[in-house]
Image 1: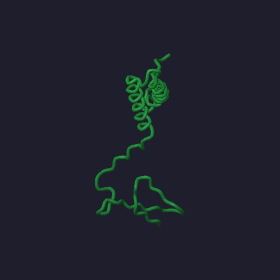
Image 2: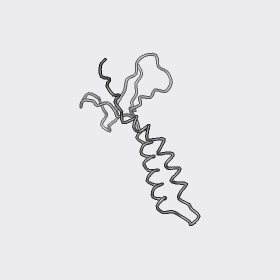
Image 3: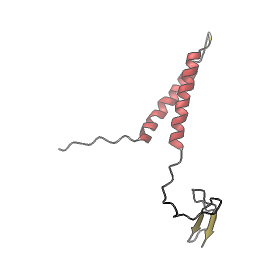
Image 4: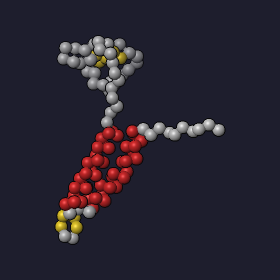
Length: 107
């Protein structure tokens, strides 16, 4: 029997594991802000910090992936920075390149 390698924990998996407790923590901390004696400023700060952390985790989980690196000079751009894309085949309707190309030609 060989030694089993431990599964690698990715950053996305860590963020997914953090998302639930941060959401619950933000709700619990927000619930503690208003007491019978009035505002609890300590809990206000805790609720703000936990909600900010939860918002950052949500942003990191939903941001688009980084664009692939290209070598300089391989893409033709117009003087104002627009890039052209040529679409071939039997295409009809709306064409979306997903990378902001505005000059689209069908052939």
